[in-house]
Image 1 (cartoon, rainbow, N blue to C red):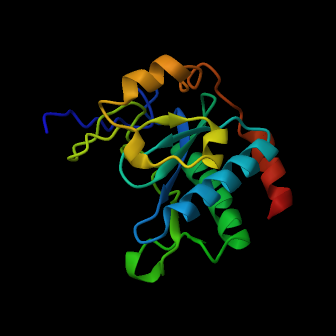
Image 2: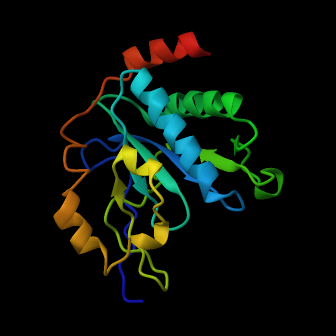
Length: 193
């Protein structure tokens, strides 16, 4: 396949204990992709309602990732706890299609909202990475309104990505330049729980 499948940490040298992102990994396994899209829509709506700007991308495999850029100083534990609260709130409201159950055998065709990725030394596929699969799929940033279209993960490959980038630009370009304070969002989230 000849690809380099990058999986960097959530933090950088010099600030290894302070992640740059909080991430929700929406993993379908046996769930329909339509359920992944619905949970992504709801996650985006919830995060915007908490006053946060979130970034959406494909995993390059079978799911979607929601990234929240973080201001400096938050710990992995804080980002994990925040993502866990968001995930549990989404599951509370959409238990028919979403779960936080880690065991695949107990997910019963529901989308797994993985918040446990938010820990030191864990890695995540960044935007624009070509995945080591036959289709040479790419982890592609999406605009939130694309969740209303009939896109397929197979639409984003090594061959199709350059034209898309020419058309829409780098949708993740501002992510690291717009870090966000979680404190107001945590306070707002508390009112939902």
